[in-house]
Length: 356
Image 1 (cartoon, rainbow, N blue to C red):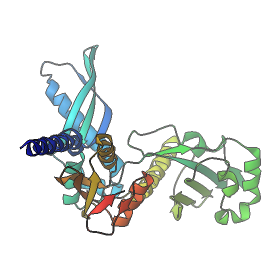
Image 2: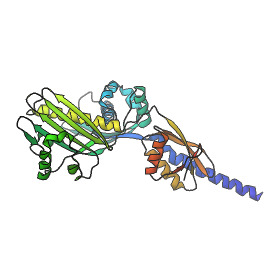
Image 3: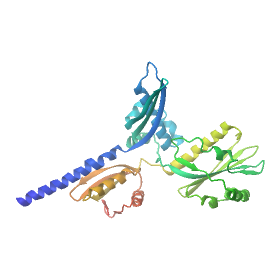
Image 4: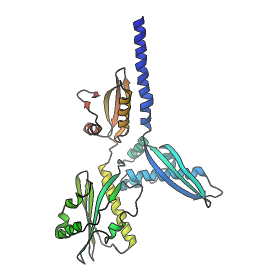
């Protein structure tokens, strides 16, 4: 009788630990969100003022900003008519950072968190593949070749160089690092002028500790503007050549529009590199020892931080292991590669993978 009593107590103890794992470490996973912060709204304080309507307007602005950051330009128009009701239904939480009245104007600043699964479900319904909102520092070299004057504009005399970073958007993922003015670099580029399109620019790029870069070479004459873009993301080089018949680089408006268009082009290239195929939902079964609560918590934290993981939950458990079902938007090799970067290795010989 004594043995049976102790055995039951032991079983209850392990059951209690497993339940703790389920309720206190997995629950937050289902609330994983896209967070959009510092949405600012202002409106006159009038007789028909309604604070709830202003907050709803903030929700729409937050949704628009999210879409601009994770959806390519060609697909953004598919979401322009998303109803406020649907947008509000995808909000997980929101908070008001600040509200104030100044000269009969009401100012509101709020943060909005969208449920990631609901956002992905909406995009999948619209046949849109989203991208991971990965911020990136990019080395950017803008060069202008004035063929009429036979001159190179590379640094402060270059209007693209001077204006490129003046108008930064919150939803932009790329942060452009421009080169410092260097006479040696200028002379190097000048010496390659006749074959500049084929020059790799590595002698300049290697001075900066950035692996990804864009070189923009603008050839201009009286007839047209020709732009050669050397875009290197994730060790893959893409070339994009464009021509313009009428473009006035003496016009601030034309320069601003030119820069905005090319920033959009580069953002789309980066989004393509980070695209998620949400239609691929690969189920993986993984077993993890549950002897150490900290080990379980850390493992679940890693799963939560991986954007390609659509969902995960505990499928079953006993006094030794938690068995997880993981839904992954990608291939098994991709999952293993990501986990390996986070120092996790698995025995994959059986249907249930075992965390080593």
